[in-house]
Image (cartoon, rainbow, N blue to C red; front, side, top):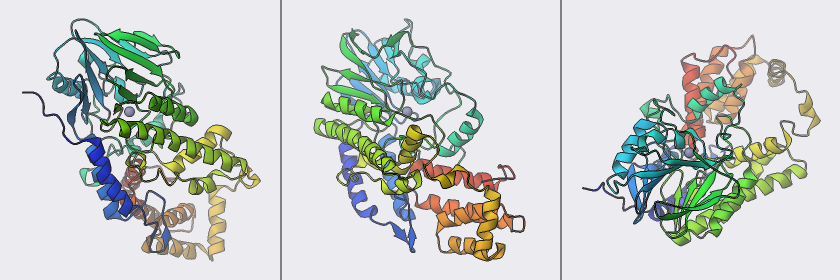
Length: 470
Ligand SMILES: [Zn+2]
């Protein structure tokens, strides 16, 4: 018997999410504290994350008569296009175990041999399981000719990037703290990371390629976006677009807090604009549910492109008006007519983080203010802050008051001063930081932020961080 095919459409989910958003995102103050845009009351944050969960529940989605997408078998999606004498696989998940599970369920819809495998880009969650799809005849494997440059080639900071990756995705959180990863489930099988990777055999140049595979006309379009080596795949007959990670149902991750090289935001916007011009009737994202409605698909792509472009343009205008990243991160917002679109909610990407990334990507670390050319060392600044507050004890009291009044961000900032002071109760500062991180996390619906706060609190609590924790 065929694997049950989902009846829940992305559009129905969007309708539910729109209702939520209308009622949820109006609160910006809790007990007189100014909150970040992705902070709401804890119950609403959980409700929103639970609703988003439906975007990656494990299932096979029948996109068209000959296109099937496996959602939720790992973090990303893998799809099968059925042709006359074979099938084409788009993306291969993270490792052979998750890929095998997806493939077994996809196989219930066609047992034809795999003629081709396509990598939309080189992120690990899209390429690590290719071997699981290979039968007797080795298939061609398609990727861009700059495949592999997604994360840059400089590995010098890998040790700290690995730690930040674990925090961003909440990889070590116990079930009680787990929600999800914004566009992926909280828990994935990661032990066989990359073990099924097969190198590309056909490299697509920037001109792209139109061809026929297994009787299916197919187009490869190079389109830098989440990575510089990204491409999207177009089936002109079926009007199906495979977006890779240039589109998923969340504001895009223009910057990843695990630490990434600058992602070319402008090119990302342009690529998504070109994808909209294809007028797809079906849109299969790299993560989250396929959209099976032409008007929703096209609107989603053009709004996505506009949202990215708007954040970029606002940031550039602010930069040229002499504003620094701290100010711009609070000022730049999604245009009002886009802010309620479910696929632009900041479950994964974050507007303020994008602003900071664009600033640093265009200008580097210096914000143009001469005060920041040579700021005080943290320990000296902490001493002066304590003196300003009327002594170490007074500063400590302010820190505790901030926590007690749920002014969590301020509590964090003060704890970061107190911990430098030799005459302070540094253990108390650490406890305040842990509690404030958990307070922020509870209100947070941006999954990477939430996971990072919680993971860091756990590391602090279990003494995994060095003496000079920050
Ligand atoms: Zn991905």
